[in-house]
Image (spheres, one colour):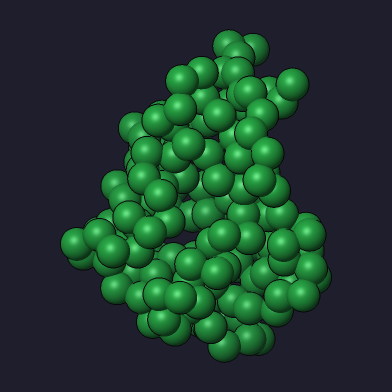
Length: 147
């Protein structure tokens, strides 16, 4: 059994903007991303300063990039979106397809490439009873714990 604690959308929105982009990196699937070397950036359209945070996906890991403009690699995919949509995606309320096609979302680098990169992370599905976590095609039970 897998134990996971997901934040609420309010908890995510009340955190500093890059916090959950940084935490998202631990959801990388090393097998799916083994041959990837791409930089993915989230640009929060409703944040005035320090709105961009990235992840460098390479060889099965995702490195957090707090300042993509200062990073040594160019951005391959940038997703510009409001934080509310990122929160809904992060906690599994919306799918990758719904995220990328939502009003107010702009993707540079192509929706197909953005989808390919996001699919290299484990996805949560809030709509499934008892919270389910999908990894590599297998569903496993996920429990929220109060500890």
